[in-house]
Image (cartoon, helix red, strand yellow):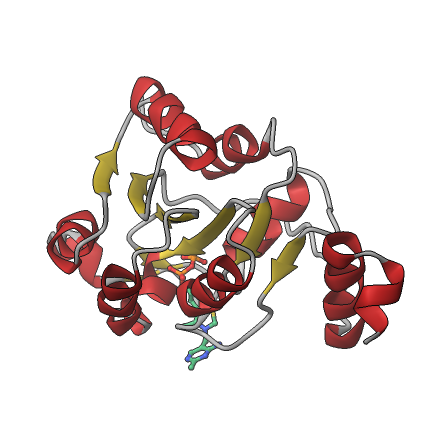
Length: 194
Ligand SMILES: Cc1ncc(C[n+]2csc(CCOP(=O)(O)OP(=O)(O)O)c2C)c(N)n1
């Protein structure tokens, strides 16, 4: 049975512990909020194509923490060069998960290149990621959830999900607030003020 996007993101974030999460703009940010708003989730709200690079910066700055980027196929396609940079930098604590509905959901469900067979996981492997997997079922998803938390990366997963419209569950909209609460939750109150 086809995976459902909200179930996928719920599974990725269920036992997140201290995981730092960057959510791509649009649907994946709503999915993360639906799984539970968290100060340690940074939703992009824009900057299409930048989610993986933001995750890389965070992973390099916080090598003791696990970092997970959850983004859409359209967003990832806009920032493909980031796969090469991550492959070169080799952050062992970074995972990039693409929730692949083969559509630009927010702008009207136009088909993306993954609907024509573009294999993002193979691109990530070719770029030098430690793993790059295409996921279609619950057992494969469970393996990704384990890798995100435990295995040396960088990891990449392209998770095929149904192309469905789901209710909006919006995170806070104020960028300054999102930045401050993320920094405070990560660094503590006084360090976050520096
Ligand atoms: C540079 C830029 N181009 C276009 C948009 C408009 N836009 C916002 S979300 C989106 C679609 C995102 O698609 P995808 O990442 O696949 O997410 P999903 O299908 O899960 O919503 C587009 C085209 C934008 N915000 N920025």
